[in-house]
Length: 62
Image (cartoon, rainbow, N blue to C red; front, side, top):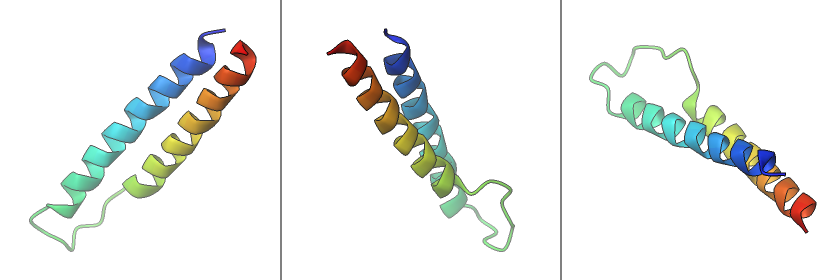
């Protein structure tokens, strides 16, 4: 029963790491360097997954 809440917490952790990656990308010295990962998309997907997992956990607990 706690699995959706653990998944939501893990998704939030991924979103925080993606936010740090995006911050690092914005502050880089050479703006012409191409990044491999689109951190904004990763962050939005992780936040969406966290919201879904949290709502699923609340639904299953109640």
